[in-house]
Length: 105
Image 1 (tube, rainbow, N blue to C red):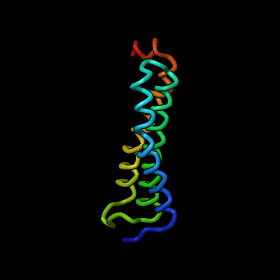
Image 2 (cartoon, rainbow, N blue to C red):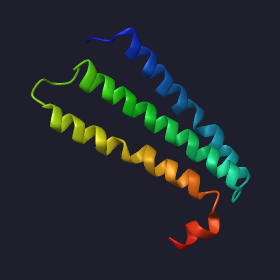
Image 3 (cartoon, rainbow, N blue to C red):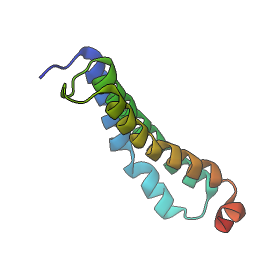
């Protein structure tokens, strides 16, 4: 198993975001319907998903730590799929400031 210093730092950052997720979730439970709290929770989830995508990019495309039988197109496709989650969380974060518009969607 190969693990560089950069990958270790990225994994620590990802785990930090995962460990921080219960805090905005608790705020969301105590203050439902407040757009700032909803945006804060969505922002933390977006950063968590983005840090996962960065780890995936680094491990698969930059350092090639994944199986050799996968080509670049397959790896890029998988990376694009994993980028959907942070983008959707970011869209939800922005739409939390416009609750009337978000309910129409």
